[in-house]
Length: 462
Image (tube, rainbow, N blue to C red; front, side):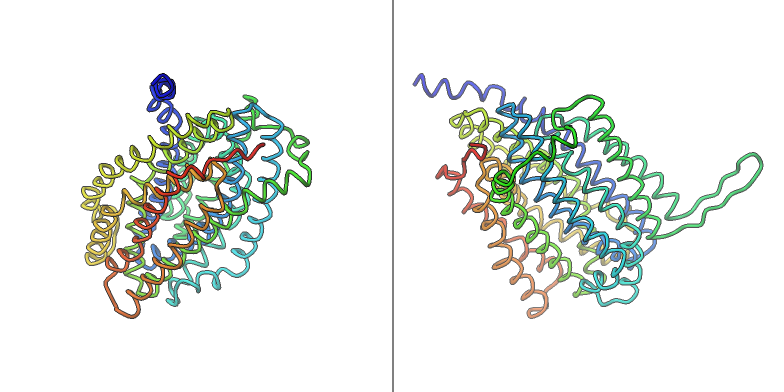
């Protein structure tokens, strides 16, 4: 009995610990969502082809984002556990590897976006108008990929070392700048200066891309300047970043490579899902993009708490408190999916705002609304699946199982079912969406079994 009481004592600060870390991450992701939503809403005023083009152009960014997240998320496994041990040398070496890999990958994507944008957009759509708009957007936004590759590792490192407020503040500034330049560059503006009249013509989808480049550049600059001025633990010298040896690189790759593969194949899967709706027609992909934009408003809660889960559990493992780690994991396993029931229901009232936010035909709005209703039913399962993979398995270094678990159900069940429903059965977009979401249910039951076994908990720094 005494042992049980001693183990339950740390849970007194459970909610305080969770939300102290999670709230700034939630707010940061909410603002990032508003940035994406702002692009979609403003471009949506131009028409269905433009909104489809920007949505598909952002799929290239989405794939890069997943790869960068895979690299940095894999690195965060080390950083959170090194943080528990207060090993700054280990944190800096991990940062060096993250920055090296991220820069190389982003350069490849940047060059492809600048040189062959039509080919990339053509993978998703055969509509020549959509391809033309998408290529313009992609060519203009491509330079931001390299800038993002520099900021991404620092953002996740600061989160992992519990400096969660700075990334939030920098994103807030980025949101304001993006909103201002989006409006100015998409639609154009006029102003007078000392009696002289100036007019800037609207650039349409290209204006949205340029605004994104400006906002991301400012966000990264602020992140680096402030973190080094305040001497954050992860903000090391260039020399300290590149002190890693061959053995440490091997250890990093052994743990992080499954995460990179996981995020890459998951991102490719989402891209295939976009391609499915795109091949069903411009109206279908427009409805799918609208659904994703609205659902992100509530999903940010789970991104924030999921990241907080990984930080809390990883630090506990680094401190050698494995019994406390299991207690926290069991608490997360029921508390957070329970939150998903209530938060998912918020999608219902949000669905009635669609006609006021998007300038598209009524039947597209109706389709998007029905897709949101389908998503509500799957929210608790999707929430647990995300916590299990991003929070439990990655914090515990169980990255091979997490990668297999995430990829297997998506590529063997969900995507084939979606393709069959769309092109053989010729079902409606909401019905196809239902098929694609079934993976969350399968991931939940298999994930619960793995969590109960305790095999997910490992110290990767030993």
